[in-house]
Structure formats: structure tokens, C-alpha cells
Image (cartoon, rainbow, N blue to C red; front, top):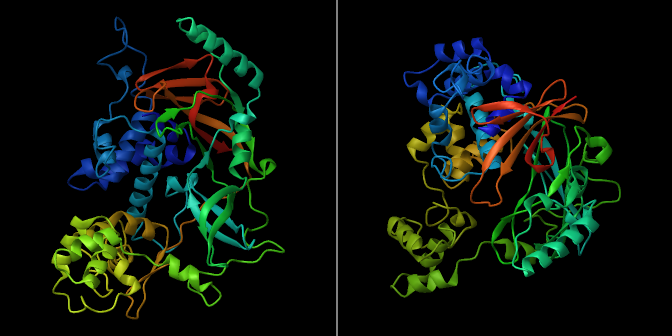
Length: 507
């Protein structure tokens, strides 16, 4: 609920789904089964949240307005639709709000693409696809520690994920004094007064600056040297979205591999200037003066050892177990590669399914490592039901089959590749390649990097396995409204520093 309330506080979602006209249009275009229709569910939710019809004051004599229009909305049909097909959101278990945000944006992008599949050829923008308002282009830079050569990769993202650098806390002395006090109190067999707890206070600006700093990656396979070593990665933005979402990574895994929640407080500005923080890539991004690119994998300039090391290797244990059953070693290797070394049982099933393939005893080709591939290297024919599901999202059958072949018939990966424009049709024998643009371009907004705080989603609770999410919405006059499911009230002292996901909109 908190993520929906935060998203519908933004103009893009409110305009697209929040009006009576949008609701009427959705019902007019609805299929015979509207409970599964994207347009109907989003318009119902938007109208319920924004029309004011379901947020009237409680009736006289009623403490909470139960049974009246003041009791809010209970979008069970929306929850069932949004959770369908997801291993977590289709259940009643504790769920992560940020993961739901990303899942919902994926549903919106797919739904809007299907809606627009028969329209003009220009790209989809934020006016038609509100998920585009939250999306921006990112440039990732990798620098090889041994050769100092670099690689640039651009991609789309819908949030800036930031770690919390505790060393940047502005009250480290107070925190250290409290820790000494806590140890003394607990040593005496007493409990610390919760009101006396001193949390580290870390500026959100420090978190954002840290997100652009180089991070060390061990075990990097360099195409320049052919050896594994250290690399350094960093991130910059290539465009600024209309709605900037900042995800604070408060749920961490400790040295004992036990997940926990950081008990920290952030100093959160109500206005952000990303240019002043240096988040944008220099110029239009790409290679900078004095830099040299890392060779592409498999190119003539790449070190031979790198190409050999990058090739997938069959799990020796799986191969040995299958060979002990009497299967030829070559077939065992192919089975292990085709199932991505998932284990002897999946490999055995693959062998039984493909033992009559005409090329089962042919030498191993690189394509044989593709999941679902046949013995000699061709990918299995995509399942008809998967092709139909992609067609329902607005893609042509040929594009759907090409994406499925390239992604080993993995439906979710194929859909992601299609939506990111990473599939092209190859009229030759290949049938399709990843890396080009096989659909109309998705138009992303861009503009100045100055933002105002619009909404905050906070996790209430000390455990990663339990708790509750609430939303604070910042109004035009600077006041805050607390949204706790159906309970909505003014918040005189909003805990803005305890947020988990922050929503900023362009000034």
C-alpha cells in the first residue's frame, strides 16, 4: 500500500490512472475478464486513491468510519492481479516494499507496451507510460586494475540504490558514548530505555556521493591480460528522471551471514541538486580523454587466456556421476552445460530428452551451454504458450521467438530483453540476436537535476522478517500526511530520517 500511495503522489501516475475519465476508458476497453486486465486494475486503484470519494470523514457515531466511504479502499483484486506470477507477492508472507516497487513498474511498462502495440511508431514516453517517469539511463564504468583500461556499459534503471557509510555519521562521538552506556546498563542486567537510544546520523547527501565512488571487485577476468585480478567500478547518470527514487539499503547481511536492519537515521534534504553532487557523467558519457578501452570478449585484441577462461565449464562432479551410469562422457558434459551445472538430476532429465538428437555426439559448441539447447548447439523451439504470452504484451511472434531462443526459453528473461530493446531479428540462420533494437525506442524524460521531496516509504520494525510499511506524503505547503493503510492523518513531526525509499520529483 505504501508504494502505491507514494507513486500516486507523483504527477505521472496521477494523470495516467487517477481520473474518472481514465476509469471510464479502462472499463470501456476492458475484456470479458476485467479482474486480470492491467488497465482496469490500475485505473480502479488510481481513482480509489485520488478521487476523494473514499476518503470522507468518518460518519457520526463511528470511531473509525468502518463501513462508510471514510474507511478507505481494500484493493484485493489489484493485489491478486499484481501478485500473480511472483513467488513472493502472490503470498501473504512479509514482503519488501522496494522489490514491490520494481515489480509494479515492470508490470506498468509491460501493460502500457501492450496497450500501445497498435499505435503510431513514435516511442513511448512518460505521458503514455508513467513508469518511464521514474526511469533513467546509467553508465557503469569498469577499470581494470592491472592494465588501467576501461569498459563502459549503459543501461536503464528506476532507482538509485545507496549504502549507508556509517563513517560519515555527524554524531560519532554521541554514538560512541551511548554504546558505552548501553554496555554498562546491560552488564548490570537492565534494559536500555528506548527513548535514550542514539542512532548514527548520516547525511543522505553522503550516501549519494558514496554511490558514485569507485568500488573494488575481486576476481575480475581482464580481457586485456587474460588473468583474474582487481577491477574498480563506478556509476554515473546519463539522464535525470522526472521522479527520482532513492533506495536506502538498510537491510544488510553481517559477517555471520545473518540478515539485519541498520538502525540509523538520515539527514534528508527536502531539495536535491544532483549536478552539485556530481552524479551526471561528464559530457554525454563514454570514453574520456587519456583512457583506453578494454578489448571486447572474443575479439582479436582480447587475451587468448581470457576467452578460454570465460567459456563455460561442465561440473566435473555432475559429469562423473552421469558417466558412472554408463553415459558417454561427451553427452554428460553437454547435459551439465545445457542445464548450467544445476545438478545430476536436471542433467539426467536433459539426457533422456535429447538422447535421440541427431547431433548429440557432435563436438561441443558454445551454444550448447544455452539452457534448453539441443545436443549440438541449436536452442530448442520456443514453447507456443510462451510465444503467445509475449504476443499479448504487444510483441510480434518472430520477435518473441527470437528473444526466447536467445534466453534459453526463459520467459521472464525474454520479456526483459524485449522491453529493453535488446533483441533484433537476424534474417540469416541465427534466428535472432541480443544487443540491437528490435522495437520502437522507449523515450525517457530528461531535464534539470533539481528535485523536491514528494514522499517517503518507511519500514516500521527492527527485523527484516517482520514489520510494517507506511508512507509520508509531502504536500504543496510543506506539511506531511501520514498514510498508514486506510488511516490517513496529518503528521506534525514526520520521521523523515527513518525512510527506506525516498521519492523526489523535479522542481
